[in-house]
Length: 248
Image 1 (cartoon, rainbow, N blue to C red):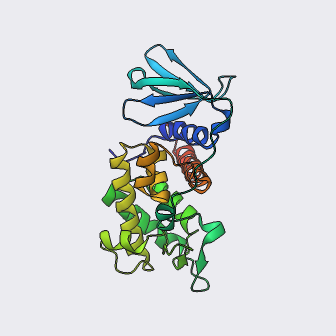
Image 2 (image 1 turned 135 degrees about the vertical axis):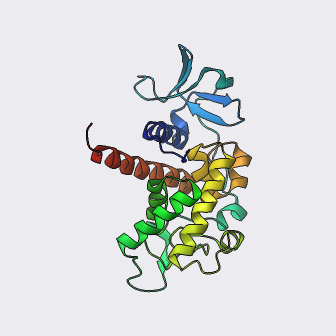
């Protein structure tokens, strides 16, 4: 099954990502059987499902299998001080292209049709939704093949040299190689986090060590913004794709 082909599941994950982005509004911390935690306003059992409500009006919620709940705890009225980012982790991670990437070459945009062809090919090879790959490319580089972050991440999917090397990429500025390595890496992360898109994206941005340390999306403003942005863009693309399908 292709990772994140179901748009409804992706929409639920947007809510999950945003709830983790706004801990000051949360009243409960839910521990799931996979060891990860999600902060929410309150929770309830509805039939055989566990609902995590993101606000008191109950108009936004995450729905999970009923047996996923391991424990719940009431959070203090004021959240604890946000920890400083792990400098080792964040120094080796990609960042959102709009604010941090610098191009080493002018007019480094890849032809849209050529980029789409690359994404489709890597989507099939690595079993990752093509719209998810396109969303990551947009967040990471905006389609700039020569983008370089302040931390040294390179190319369309902003691969750090070590990550690129571990996936057989010897030139991160070569579009096909870069997307091949980035697609393989996000596929690995999706597998590692059991298709939890929010966690996989957090690990892509802040590193798996940070996600494992905090047992969820790390409390880094940049990572939270990155996860929310990519999932929002992915949902937008999936909705457009679904609406373009001919009616039966």
